[in-house]
Amino acid sequence: MNADPKGQTAEFIILGSGGSTGVPAIGNIWGKCDPNNPKNLRSRTSALIKYNDMNFIIDTGPDFKHQANAHNLTNINGVIYTHDHGDHTNGIDELRVYKNRQGHNIPVYGTDETLGSIESRHGHMFESRSEFYSKVVDKNILTAKDMKQKFEIASGLYITPFEMQHGHIMSTGYRIGDLAYCVDMSYIPDESIEALKGIKTLILDSAGYQFPESRQHANLEYIKELQDRIQPEQTVLTVLSVIMDYEDVKAHAPQGAIPAYDGFKTIITL
Image 1 (cartoon, rainbow, N blue to C red):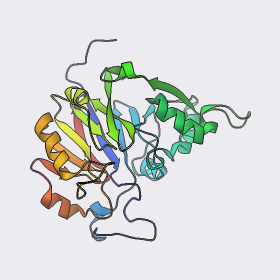
Image 2 (cartoon, helix red, strand yellow; image 1 turned 90 degrees about the vertical axis):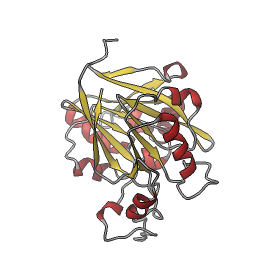
Image 3 (cartoon, rainbow, N blue to C red; image 1 turned 90 degrees about the horizontal axis):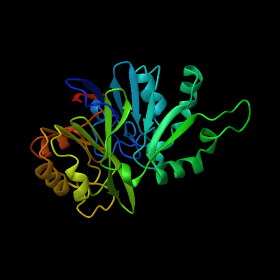
Image 4 (cartoon, rainbow, N blue to C red; image 1 turned 30 degrees about the horizontal axis):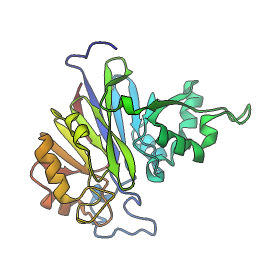
């Protein structure tokens, strides 16, 4: 592994800041969100790391085609998966366009459980079915030994995976330089929190914001606890549901926290 880069940066963009239904939900349901505020128009959760001329995606949800076109993503160098739920994975078929355009398979990263589950539902992406339908992605499995260990996904770009609890399953969070991306999750184990010390930007699942009893997503009290323990300079709340109006969340968010929106950008120091 090469020595850590000095003074390099990457751009981090939240492609989708919505929960599993997006906003509005199907049926044009806006819930408590003001439809006149464009920051309430939310696609399903996804993110982009722009590094030099390379693009790395975190999760390919059902809205991935729209997100890719909105940001003019003409190339993709890899996809990193947090977990196997459909609102984070069901856009994987769109990677075929990139494979055909770029002339090679797209590397995908995730735990064996995550990638195995995605493959069980999208097997045609992982193996060739005919001369017309060749495999599209190459698996890169993150094992238990890889958790909390940096790996180099591109020259000078290091990513650290760590385990999180998401209801009855484990999801994977990722640290990239001085930023940590934590979706979907209800709890981050102590050993994972140790891997986040020193970050400046903490992007957190907050779909359980108003639900203290939530077992799938972080609620307000746990968000505050994580802020106190990790001490980021900025906390960005994402996975925002139809009952989470942008201005209302902004007004009631803990000190140092702001709501995300589709297209939110920040710079990562690597």
